Image (cartoon, rainbow, N blue to C red; front, side, top):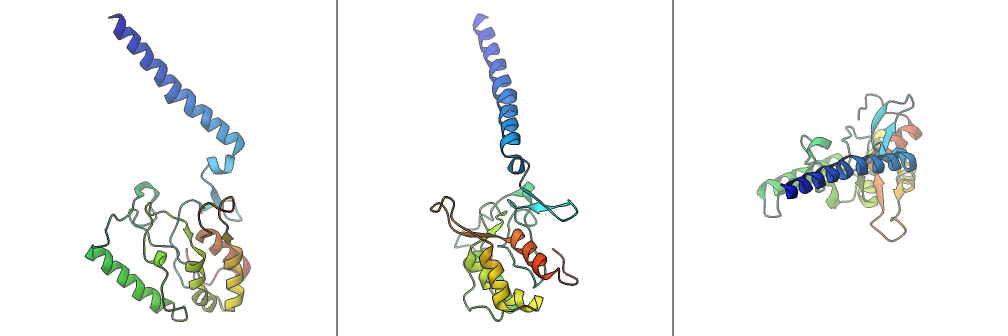
Length: 197
């Protein structure tokens, strides 16, 4: 019986410390030191309404916007259903989807270089990746420029300015946050008539 009481006390102490005290302490420290990140790195429009998070990808409709990589999370970019497609390289379903995406991208981007960047036809492991590599974003510049009635050079300079370097100069790869880039395009050139995110 004494061993049961020791085990029960240890369970309660562990539950209180690790289930309540530790999470509350970490949350409190995060709120004080990194409040923006602790609250989801939310992006707001001019009126203060939340339009997304820089950590979660979202679809963009319309030729005037840089398109993100495809998503296999739920019905697409669903944070509650984060997942990859789990389709392997021998999957006919995956090959057919990639082939259809390549055909669609070439049709939508007739002025782009012939080779479609891999990340525009492959999903990320989470299905929520908000970033593209600079090459995939730059590949879409001719379409975006034509849809916005701007020169390729103007749009290219905005994309190049949006490239985030490697973390600490050597970790990871340079990336472009698609939501931030598209918001910057709207800020510089105005939101295209009839466009929707």
